[in-house]
Length: 105
Image 1 (cartoon, rainbow, N blue to C red):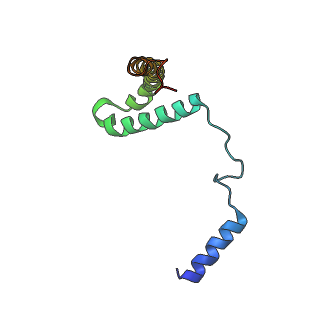
Image 2: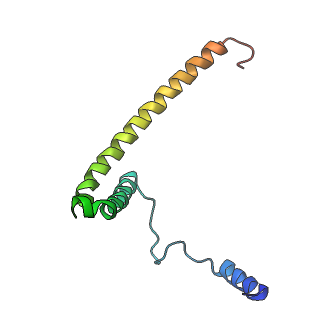
Image 3: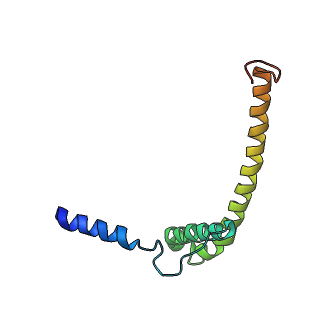
C-alpha cells in the first residue's frame, strides 16, 4: 500500500468514524458478574482443551462454576486486603509523621 492510498484510507476512516462494535448495536457497560462469567467460560474452555484427553470431556463444563466461585472469593479477599493495606499505610504515616507535625500539612 503506497502512501497516497494509506492517506486516503486514513482520511476516509476519520470521516466515517466507524463503530467500535462489529454489529450495529453497541454493547453497553459490562457488569462485574458478566465479566466474571466470560472469564470463567474462557478459562473453562482452556482447561477443557488442555485436560480433555486425560480427565475426560466434562472437565471444562464442570470447572466453570468452580472457577466462578474462585473468582468471587478472590474479589472478596482482594477488597478485604485493600482495606487492610490502607489501614497499615495510614498507621505507618501517622507514626512517621504525626498528625500535628508541620511536615504533614
